[in-house]
Length: 328
Image 1 (cartoon, rainbow, N blue to C red):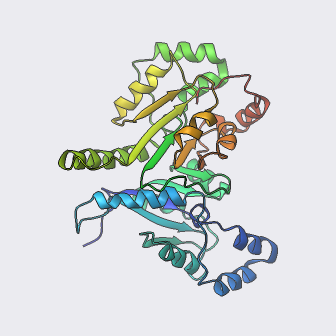
Image 2: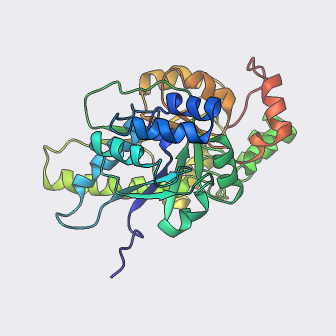
């Protein structure tokens, strides 16, 4: 009987997001594919060091202890790689070395593997390859680019803290388009007029829904065992503020998803909040927020919607001083 992943939270992760591949990538760029192959074979038994998404993946996989003994996993992580199976051996050995419960992989020699996401019911693809991520998003798949090289793991608990921007991440870019085209005043007016009309879900709504399923199991465990400590915490960190906050809250409810905390910042720097919140991963659609935030937390760029078109990216660079507020 075939194994079904329909009831799992399935994440696809490229080796470039999971591990630090700078040394091997430099060999590939500077010396070519054959030397890269030799390098990987010579270092087959040298484990790769953790990358930006390592802590998030490790903590996510640890939640499988909430499942029934002998039952299917709650969380499944699958490697999606540009490597062929031969050069991918070092990745799989590194996974084993670090004790990650990852057994499935897709190796596509020199080609992006994102088109196979629906075959595994994936709610997210994380990669360090910008082209792969943009192709995946353009094809309608939920994907994000890990930023920076700093590895954060600031506590010795097994907690998992996830932070999301709202517009263009959990929600569609419908309201962001009004902001970009007409400005802040019209944006707020639009959100008040449509407060009862839920936004369409964005690319990572299903990821949040999968996380919520696990959170409900935690609540049940807590009822059965009052000593159990809740591990998963979810927040939205958004530049929305009153009166536009209400439509965001109502949209979440209409999609059947929940968050534990919400920060409606109204243009206040997200960095200062994230530095205290210390998420193990933060998703945003705008690099103007992510680049400074990547100095305090693992960050993922979701290149979705109007803020990631050519014109909007130019506007973002013009407004880098923060003189113009944004709604994401």
